[in-house]
Length: 172
Image 1 (cartoon, rainbow, N blue to C red):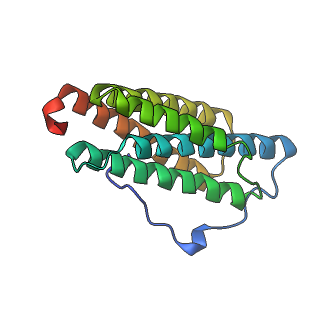
Image 2: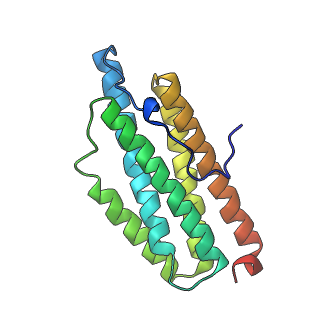
Image 3: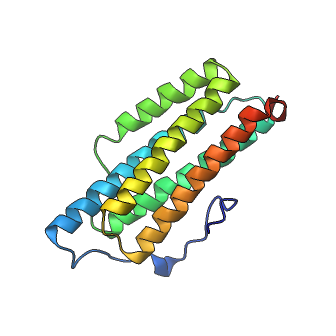
């Protein structure tokens, strides 16, 4: 079981290493596609939360800031893994930043319920993508553990947003 209360797990220098040099061409391709997918989706998620956060101090903004920090950690996880495998992030990742900007600002302007529903929808899509990539790609044990932890974090975000939707007084 993963502790979803940990926003930014410790990472030590010896954990960063070259990976995948002995993989087959097909496995390397699957790992590259999977890591790029996860990296770009996390760019979008972090951007959504950045844009949903307003300047007004509130409990909701505190939750959004914690979620943004967590998503930025995920983004770093996958960018690190890309470089460990000798890959680069997608040149088209800016599109995910743009989608995050539209979804984040759009949902913020439509109110707290829409903002929370957008978070639930986005995180549910992420959990689905994580499951698909965990099942469909042959990951090394350390990368798999990171993907599983990040997937658990996304499920934790869904629960947090659902709880805040059910108890709107908590974010008033």
